[in-house]
Amino acid sequence: MPKFISIKASDGLTEREAEYLKAIFNLELMSKKGVVGSLEVANFMGVSCATASEVLKKLYEKGLLNREPWRGVSFSEKGMMEVNRILRNHRIFETYAYRFLSISLEDACECANRIELQISDKIIDSMCRILGHPEKCLHNNDIPRRISCCLRK
Image (tube, rainbow, N blue to C red; front, side, top):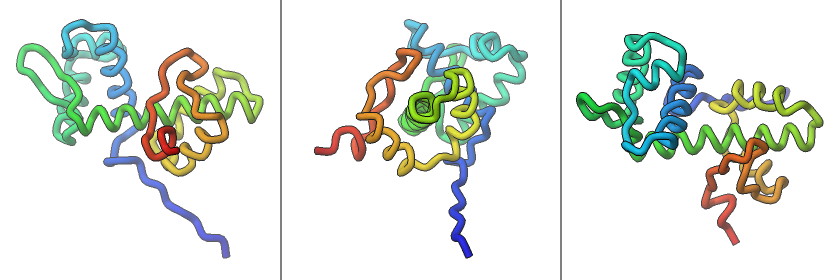
């Protein structure tokens, strides 16, 4: 009988929460303040401010965000590690799927969105090695490095 391995989403994150982390990451890149307001997140996500605030509160309670009253949120160390893991998983998988499975970039991106929380670091590291440890994804965004994969001699 085949052995099945159950891979759970890290820290119990939902896909929606992962999308918020990626949104905050992108907004922080565009911002010079170092914090992102809930209204900015709401506009970016296309939701109400109340909805964004609710998700930001959950992410704060999970220890992924720091909150600065009347200013906004920023990543905690744990949150920065988690968003980098999610982005790495997405960008490596997307690049691998596009190059080796001959699917469109749009389909590779859509599939990466679906599995970025569930795919194991071991599988992503293997894909990364096969790809030659790329520094940029197909959208020319940086791919976060993992010491145990990309910096090992």
